[in-house]
Amino acid sequence: MAVLLSLFTTTILTACAHRDIPAVQRSVTAIVERGTLRVGTTGDYRPLSFREADGAYWGFGIEMAQEIAASLGVATTFVPTSWPTLTADVLAEPQNFDIAIGGITITDTRKETMLMSEGYLANGKTILCRASEADRYLSLADINRPEVRVMVNPGGLNEKFANQNLTKATIIVHQKNEEIPALIAEGEADVMITEITEAPYYVKNDQRLAAPLLGEPFTHGEIGVLMKKGQEDLLQKVNNVIRTMKANGRLRLLHEKYGLVYAF
Image (tube, rainbow, N blue to C red):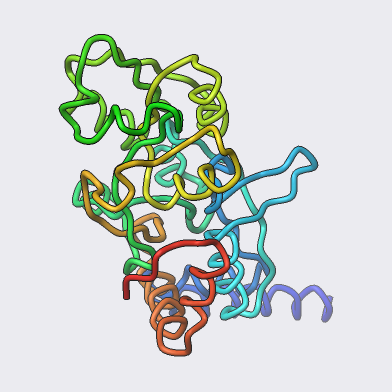
């Protein structure tokens, strides 16, 4: 009886302790108690977030997630998501993951319904095309023609940009983002709408490809960490990690490691 009473008392005290913690401070507490930071990521966006066939993840965003987890003293667990389902996965109840990371542009629309961290990587829309045709695409007008086949992945800002700005071009939606560069090189389409964070990787690793407008992106923005509202304590922790990495040079080193332009 004494043991049962002790267990009951411990349970009540624990429940009361959690009830005394303000709602905006419970996220970090729950993560620390769980011992792992659950990170949603698409795994299809070299060199920010990519999942190999054996399930291993690598990339700039993956290392950012590991830095955040380390600051909390916990491990990292990666949870698959996709661009079409990203918002729904972030807003799911119960939560699918604590944060989402890897090529997620900070936008006012996202900030209306979710939380977004400070930027840790400069971003902007650009194109990939065949190196043999690099001089053919020197402006948005050069791409916005009926004979130009533009390939995008579904559900993200690349598809949205193409639909809004390339109304005369032929838009082709391909399900797997990581397959599009090779399809461009092989002639299945002419242009890929991508980001200045992604294009250099493919140009470096496939001589058939070029990014002729890399220095003149169509848009300018930043990539950040996405999470559900009500996790303001976690948002503060994430922003502190980003600020620390900027101050101690770690963020610059990551940019250099992945061949990305440092803009902070």
